[in-house]
Length: 548
Image: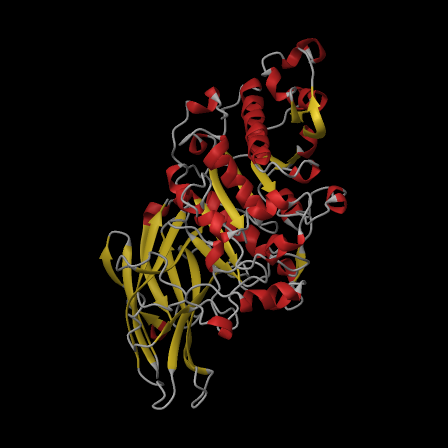
C-alpha cells in the first residue's frame, strides 16, 4: 500500500479549482511496440467535423486543446521512466536539490522518476496546478502484473504532490481522464494501491471514456492468448468484475472513492468502430435486458451498460470506442470532462410523469423509447446524446405512462435506479471558462448579445419518443414525438450565480417573444417543473439548477 503524508492533510471534498491533469490511454493490444512510438499515446489526435464550421470544424485533440484553453500548458510527460528491471540509485547519485524527495521515487522499481527531468521542474517556474501528464504504462514490458500499473500511477501522483510542496505551492489533488483500460488502472490504484479511503485525498475527480468497468460481454479473446497480455485481458472478464472476492470489483468502488466524483462517458456509435467483428460479437453476446440480437447497445467494443458504475454520473456520446473519430479523439469528451472538473452549475433533469397518446399497435408488440439530447449555447456539441440510432434511449416501455422500469428486460433503467426518481441526465455547466476565440463565459454570454441585456445561459433540450413493433405487424420505426425546447437562466450578473433572476422555458430561439415562453413552476429553492406537449405525447419534467 502507498500513502502520501503530505496529501493526507487535505480533506475528501472535491474542488473546482485547477488541478494537475493525468491522461491514461486504454489497452494497447498484444504487441505495443507501435504504441510506444506514439509521443502522447494518441491524446494529441483530434477529429474533423465536416458538418461544422469555424471554431467547431477542427478539434485538435486533448493535448493541444488544453494548451489553447484557459490552461497555461506545461509538458511534463517525460518525467517518468519505465524499465525492464528495477533501477537502483543511491542518495549520492541524486542531485542535492532533490534531497527532500523520497529516494524511493527514484530507485528500487521498474517505474521511477527521472532525476534530471525532476531537477529541471524544481528549478523552473512551472505552476504544478497547470501541468498535464501522460501516464505511459505501455512502456512497461512486464504485462503479467496488473497491480504494477496501479502502483506506478500512485508513484506519479506522489511525485506531482511532492513537486508542488518543494516549490512551496499548495499540495494539489489530481484530475484524471482515462480511456478504456486506463479507467481500470485508475480503479486499481484507487481500490488497491492506496489504503482504503485514502485515494480521495489525492485524486480530485476522474473521467473515464468507454472504460469496461463491468467487463466486456464476450471473452473469446482470452482463448487466443497464451502470452504477455493475459493479465490485462483478465481485467475485461465480467465474472471477475462481479466477483465479491475481487478487491477491485466494480461494486466495491464506493468503499474506496466517492462515486459522485467519477464521471463515466459512454460511447454509443458501434457502427463506426473499425474492428467490425467486435460489433458483431456485442450483438451476439447480449447482456441482461437487451432482448438478444435485436440490439447492439455498445461503442463497438464495450457495452453501454458495462461502461457505467453504480452511483456514478454518466453521459452518452455518439462516438465509437477507439480510432480516428472516437471517444478519445472527440471534442465532446473534452467539453464534458472540463465541465465536470471545473463546472460551477450542476443540472439534473428528471421525468415526473408522462402520457403516450398515440401508437401502441393493436395486433403487434409495441415498445416505446424515450430520450433527450442536450446542448449548451455557444458550443456546437452535445453534452448528452440519446437517439434511436444510438440505441440508448430509456426503455423499452410497454405502458403509456413509461412507468414499467422495474420489469425484467428494461434495457436502461433510470439513472437513479428504482428509488422513485426518474433521473434522465445529470451534468455540469461552466460559466467561468473561456473559449479560444473569446474571453466571455463558455456556457454564458458567449454569443455577443447586447451588453445592456441581463447575462444568461441557455440549454437546448431535444426530446424524442419512438415506437418499435417487435412482431413487425405494425410500424417498427414510428416517431411519436420530437420537439426542441430552450431553457434560459437569467442572471443579474453571470459572474455571480446567486443572482439568478428567473428560469424560463422557450419553444423558439427568439427569447424576446412572449408567445414562445412557457411557465416553469418553482417547486423548491433549486428545482423547477415544466410541461412538454405534442400530438402524441405529454410529459412533466423537473429541472434542478444548483450553483456548485
